[in-house]
Length: 275
Image 1: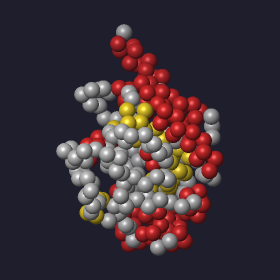
Image 2: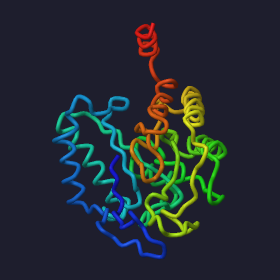
Image 3: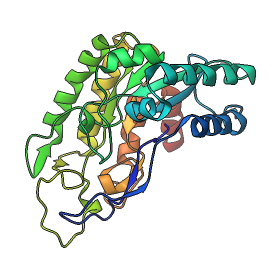
């Protein structure tokens, strides 16, 4: 995923402070061309690069920021088409361009996309996904929100987005949410907006496993082809959403993914070795 958003001074963030800009995420055409040329030269030929339906998967985090950076919809489509052509000319085949679409501003500087389905069609994206549940589901309680109830609301969105877009929608499962580590710890916490936000609680490995099982059932319905799932997140430690093992739950979140989506060959092999 290309995280083309602004880098703001939000860690640690003090109450009532300004979100000062440290580095702009804007990518005018020459910057975009240079960045994508670097991808083509250094990454697309690697044997481990992920392909979806044979296409090289490239995901854009902030679509509105990309449109504005490149000078509008028509210009952005032209630049993306040229990116596709340069990839083909380098003999790497086709791109699989994915748009990360969301409707709730979280990070300061993020730009909400109006009429996302139309934008995705005009720009010629091949698929759509979400990055994290809090981008689409309001956290209506404070200071905490129960994971299981919140997951139920996010799951309803999968069906809404599946019908909204003309391209495949890849569902998202979020492991948790707690951005309080990004605040100054001596400040009194309040519902003031990022990173002073409500916290997901009850996001146990078991609850996460249940959400994954529901996602698997959604994919098995056959409406999302290919059956791709995005998970938030590998290492967002300071936002309370990470899969890496810790001293409290160990590898249980990763084990949950393997139990739901791992191959039977791996499970049988492990059972044989334990016997």
